[in-house]
Image (cartoon, rainbow, N blue to C red; front, top):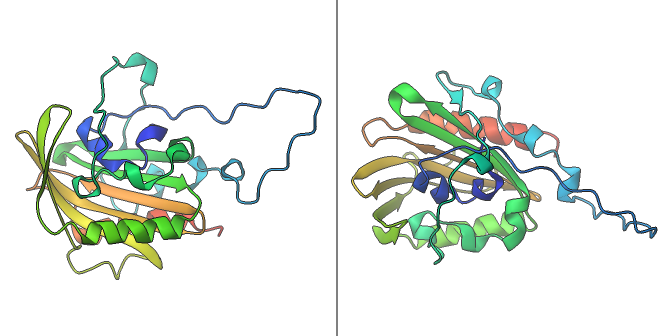
Length: 235
């Protein structure tokens, strides 16, 4: 499972070698002060079972994928993180999301160990989801060349392009989908990613793999459409 704090920052998943961890606990009940509790706002994240909107192994339309085992954050050694925010062209989308977004997402990572491929998907509750996704698309349009930076002490190079064949086969009216090539130190990988918005929900999908063994575009379309169909089915 993907930790909540990594569900929407897809680059973080790559830079920590896609290490999985259990989602944080649900909302804590408010203390009884004797005063009536305020009515929750319509479409509140508390009304949405995000875990129930995320793909399981049984939902995947293609074969060979295994859900990565969950590990507890507490069981992992504490590691420092970069203190400077990354950039969209470096696959760091943190700055586009509200600070409290990490409390309202749920995701999973699936692996094909023999091919060293991973498929990451998450559902994110956020106000103005469609506007945010449109803003992300505008930001990505500016990524016209290789983006270089240093992340976690390693030189990183990212190049983002339009999806092969375009994104017409990916369902959804408001979406931002691209393919990428990334080199972290001496490790190279490639894949595709997509953000699709509907109302106050964003479904994210991403594939990673060695440049010679990447998930093919047609399979990425199938995986992404399966994710959106499940997440948006009740909307």
